[in-house]
Length: 408
Image 1 (spheres, helix red, strand yellow):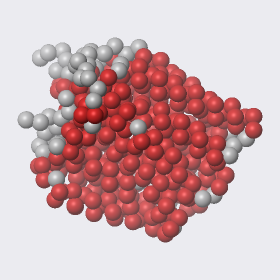
Image 2 (image 1 turned 30 degrees about the vertical axis):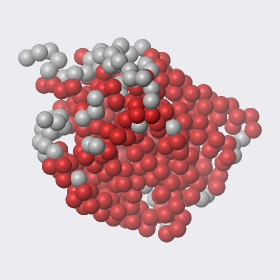
Image 3 (image 1 turned 90 degrees about the horizontal axis):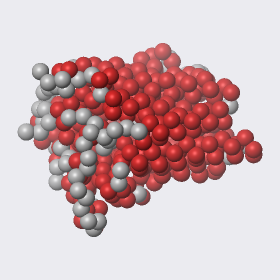
């Protein structure tokens, strides 16, 4: 059996992948810490659910405005350098926010301005980061490599919110300084990653090449179905933006409790990613994808009804488990069905779908919470997620019938 065969795949034996996941873990801890601090601080300043939704909207807008540019840059330049520069910008933005807050205090508008800068940099970072893994491992190792990378990232997602909630006791500035340092560590690590396979020769820039990612996705029902399913399901079902309200007003848990709530989905996701790294999906991946998204919707409904911190954390952990299953399937399908020379442009479009479901989903949650109340908003989202699953199963039969992650 060859040393690099899927059955013998080990994260510890792949130095480039190990460096990648270490860098991503540092950046994830930084981002999650910042999320806890910003959410609690904004709600402390204004007390409005709508402002929590605006936190997501401000970070999302750059990704949709820059989608064509981001994908083109990722496919025409050293992807490590793109990620490195983006993370450095994020580090300096947080550093600047911390310095200004130390000198003159915080304001809602100032925080939103720095979030806009962060969102712009993150649109380049997130889209390009996804394209690095296929250049570090063999194609048949990609699903396990992505699951292994996800397990490390989910561990960081557990640590980040809890650490952010703890450090927030010393003030938000402490959180922002720490996050800035972690982003710089990640940037340096990414710059040093050795790439196994180089990019294909680049085509001359034209409107056709710029729009190629959108054209490819429109013509591939499996890829289109997978990323649009995630878009609408999480757009409706995500309740992350409202966690500060649940922590403070419904569960009476405080900022430390908020950190625990934000970490709970990552606990479940970590378990799922470890399981998937050891036991790759071998059949019925389409039906498994739909079942996992339906489970996400059901857990959203249960979370809305819970009045216990322990039960809420358990429900969020299960939500994280089923969400990780869908993430690994979707990400593997997108990467394996896309030629390497187009991965940047396709990933940029995919990142807009993900950003729409996450950041714009936070805005949607804030709006519906302002209109209907916090609990009804989350209930409506969970029910909407289940409806999306039923509709998408009929709209994308090719995705429903997909047996294996690798086509053919």
